[in-house]
Image (cartoon, rainbow, N blue to C red; front, side, top):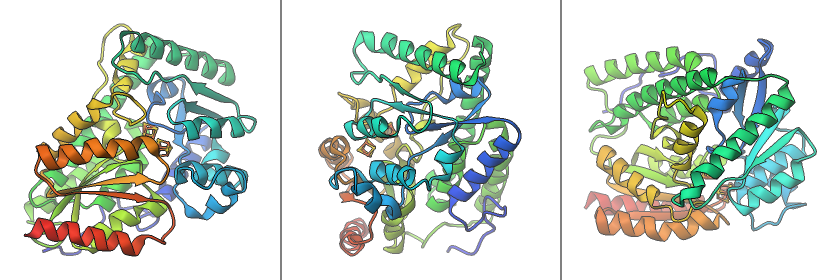
Length: 388
Ligand code: SF4
Ligand code: SF4
C-alpha cells in the first residue's frame, strides 16, 4: 500500500507547478550573468547552446488561459500547444519568453513553422531547417549544415565563439544527465513501481533547463530516496493497479488532466513516452568522434517525432518501452489538430494491440476541461479491460 512519503525533490517549490521551479532556476542563471535561449522542440541542439555558455529554456506552453487570445489571430482548429504558446507571447505573459534573449525554432509541423513567422520580430530568432526524411543519406549532412548555421547565428547574436572541445564537454554532460535520469526511470519499471508520474514529471520538467551539473545533486537525492523506498517495500499507487504507458504529443499544464484522470481511475502511469517525458533521454550522443556537431546531428535525427516520415523508430522505441516497463495498457494522447500524431496513432494502436496484445486507447484532446468526463469514462473502460 502507498503510505505518505517524503517528496523526492524537497525544496521550496514542492507542491507548486514544476514551471515555478524551472523559472526560478532560469532567473538565478540570469543573475549569474548567463543568457537564455528559448527553444520550442527536442530537436534544438542544447549541447551547442550550452557550449556557448547559454541556457536553453522551453517555450512550449500548456495553459488554456491564453487560447482565447490566440484565437483572435490563429485558427481555432490549430494545436493547443501552438495557440497557447502564441497567446502567452501576444499577451506578454510568458515569463520564459520574457527571459529569453533569442529564440530557436525548427521546421517540424506546419502550425509551429507559421507561428514562428508571427513572432519573429519579437526577439532575435533562427529557424532550423529540419530534414524530415531521416533515413535518406543526405539527411545527416543537411542536419549538420543546419546545426552549423545555428552556431553562426548564436555566435553572432551573443558575440562569442565556442570550440569543438567545449561542444564535446557538453555532449558528455548530456550523456551523464541521460544516464542518471534513466536510473530514476528504473524505479518506475519496478513491479510494483516506487515512483509516481508526478514525481517523474517534476524531475523531467527541471531537466529541460537545468545543466547536468546543477541537476546532479537533485537526481542523486532522488535516487537515494527511491532506493530507501524500495528497501522499505513502498508501493506507488493501489496494490495490483493496472499500469499504463502514455505516449503521443508533449503534455503539460492543462493537458495533464489525462494523466490525472488515469490515476484517479485507479491506473498507475509507469512510462511517459513523449518529448515532455522520457523521449529526449532515450539514447546517448556518441562521444569522442572528433566531429561533435555531426555526433549531435546523428543523435537528434533519430528522435522519433511524428513530423518524420517514415517514423518507424517510434514503434521500435515503443517496443523497448513496453519490454522495459511492462505496462498493462497504452494511452496515446493526441493534441487536437496535430495531424501527424493523430494519423500515426493508427500504426501505434496496431502495434500495441497486435504485436504486444495490450489494450490501447487514443485520446484526442485540447487544454480545456470540457472533455474530462468522456475521457474518464473511456479510461475507466480501458482499465476495466486490464483487470479482467
Ligand atoms: S513532438 Fe516533435 S515537434 Fe513536438 S517537441 Fe517533440 S520533436 Fe519537437
Ligand atoms: S503537438 Fe503536433 S501540432 Fe502541436 S506543436 Fe507538436 S507536432 Fe505541432
